[in-house]
Amino acid sequence: MSGKEDQKADAGADYSMDHHSGQPADADMVIRRTEEKDLPEVLAIYEHARSFMRENGNPRQWGDRWPPEELIRKDISLGKSYVCEKKGEILATFFYNAGKKVEPTYSVIDGKFTGSDEYGVVHRIAVSGNGHGVGSFCIDWAYLRCGRNLRMDTHPDNKVMQHTLLKNGFRYCGIIHVEEDDDPRYAYEKYPERCGEEYYLKNVLLTRYHDEEWGKPEHDEQRLYEMFVLELFQAGVSWELLLRKRENFRRDFDGFDPVKIAAYGPEKVGELMQDPGIIRNRRKIEAAIGNAKVVLKLREEFGSFSEYLWHFTGGKSILEGMSVTRNQLSDDVAKDMKKRGIRFAGSVTVFSFLQAVGIIYSHEPKCFCYERDGAESFRDNRYPSI
Image (cartoon, rainbow, N blue to C red; front, side, top):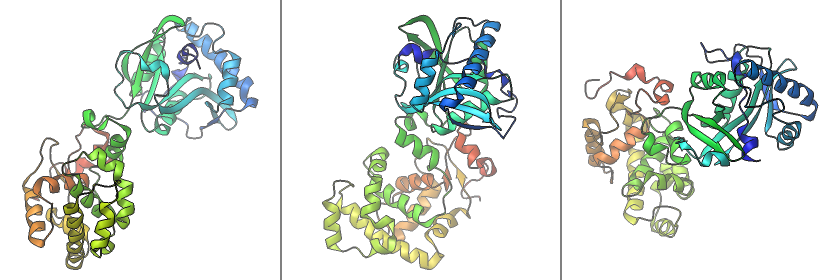
């Protein structure tokens, strides 16, 4: 698809959005792929959008003919065209695609996209005159479907769309230049605000780890022990490398089952040392085996590894800033672990582990995870006072 085809995209027909709630007013709306039989209704919606843009000071973006029928047919054949309907009536249509660097014209911008290079894109969005909140519904659908990293662009004259995007949490990023068109396009991007963006947005793997795992208060035995073993191996290497090797660790360490790991002998150690898919450090491998035996004893004493870890804070998460690398809690836990025979678990390693599983909570209030995890409820928790 050419740059011109991709850039002549964003109809100003998103005027039906509910700017107060940011949500569709009608939950009966659904989105599906466009079918050939939908073409007459889709063409009628685009005609309505062109009229709306002309009436609202934006006659240049789509003119009298954009998008042409052949382009819409192409979108349908590629499975990239979607419609929003309610009880059989089509209320909106748009182009959607997602992937790594999926929009070639976004590779050059007078400004900067901040999110990762894997994102979704919405073009040619147009809404009929019926329904309330249809545009918001479509944009939110695309935002969630692409993994919360969505990019859109619009014409400088399209004040309605610019207002719509900003109201829906998009950030202005800069100007896109299109070779076939002298008119610039304003580029926008929406992704959740995160703490430590300069680190976590380096790649998709780190971003997903931040969004889905890091700092989330964890009580599951398998998940806790997996993170404990990975933190042991992380010392001296990047966490990104550990994440890339994670599935290999899961395979080689029997799904991080401490019962099985505790039974490993010299032959198993030799096998692990031959696998380039993990961190081949004999001392760490042997420490993981010895630590598994201690964890089994902790289960006998406390009922579970989870109960042991959380008993230090009375089952509560405590807040700590991201700039800290150790504190009194990690000192105390590391000291207790060492006394029990756990190796490679100094205070810095323990602090990182406790952060990862949410016992020490370090997501910042601006981060979307803070609200998701209900962190406001334990913002005053401090160790050792709790």
